[in-house]
Length: 410
Image (cartoon, rainbow, N blue to C red; front, side, top):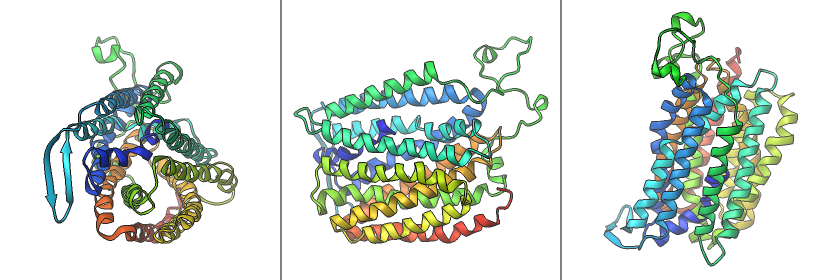
């Protein structure tokens, strides 16, 4: 998350400099989840079969390579390939470095199933007593990355070298992550291979799953079988709607900061860091305290309501109001999302955890594709009223979440 969030404060400025507009920024933002939509369920299934550690390593290497492509884009000449003028999507130029930005985000997205695999890893090492607290810690560590990343990008990007230093920092961070996974992370999914006398190259490299007839708990991990698990389809709908609402926000807010608030990359980084700092407080001590006293379902319902209020207030556009709305954002997201993931993690059991998380990740990716494209596009038409659309979607999530009280087996 530290490597991912370091791009947030300056990506919108790069798109603007390389000839893009609001629509192009939204499409660029959607490229990562579009390719993640394809890659995440595959990586999730592979993690059930080959092991979490191998797939985490693969995905992180993909991220590292993507950052090198991103770095290349910064040094290419801004030569116009062609120009687009449209009454619906606006006027913009397609340049060579802009295409390289798209290539970098596509490569990172294709191997970007690391979040779903990490969630499966966490579920492997959790039990019913510490599951919600563990997912709270996972969310807190993500928020910590979002604190340091934007601040680091804003500070490093303010030097004479511009965006080069933050991108080099992201390369260093990804390299460290590869090292940690390769040399320090043990495998969590130990039920992978059953040794046999028969020689097989797949068995030499631990790439063949134990046969189902010899493994009582072995289950089908196809997409159809995942949807057949009780409550999974409903949870995927919640996952989709939540990501759709947040993607409307992330697709429009950077443009809002650039054009309406006249912020620079440092000011945008400070806001995201402030937001993430509040979420650490919520996901850490507050969630740890509440998780022992309040059910996951109640926290999801309460958190979604706080998010509705947050986006409704945020549409005001006043800078002071934005920082006040950040408190509601942190409270809502910090309580809702770890609790939701805790419920979801119970559905896959031991043998379908990676597949369930991968399909859920694809659901979020599909929502992100739509939300990021239309978020940027709609902001160019209706401005900050786009935040009301995010509030409306989360209001639907709030209403649907009451069904979780009837999921008695969870």
